[in-house]
Image (cartoon, rainbow, N blue to C red):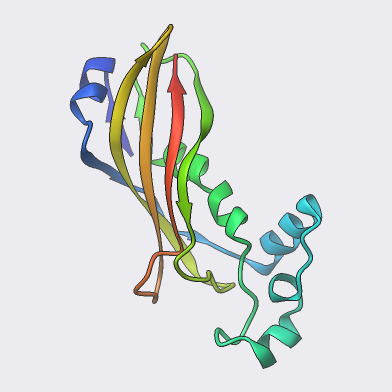
Length: 151
């Protein structure tokens, strides 16, 4: 866990890699629950038997948006903000790419870089670049610019 004591310290970290999250294991149960929540039941995600036969990974793969949905968890479990920060809000995304599929049963972690800090009325806007690595894969499974408002 990286502790950032003040807004001044936070601003000084712009342009730097700030933290690496813990590993998170992706299970078929998570994938199935995400499919139910979103209505995306494409066989590559929810049919292990067919995926074992037809996909190069030999099994199902997680939805890209499931991977993306892990970004707030990766941030909150990796970085703590001092008492000056009373609230964080997910503000949006700039650029998102899924360079490689995420096979079920693998672990992922986020390499977290603070790209920019901008003043906004009442707070700061943080642009985090999070590169989601998957154990055993050379390419990342997600690279995203994640905007967070800090009040």
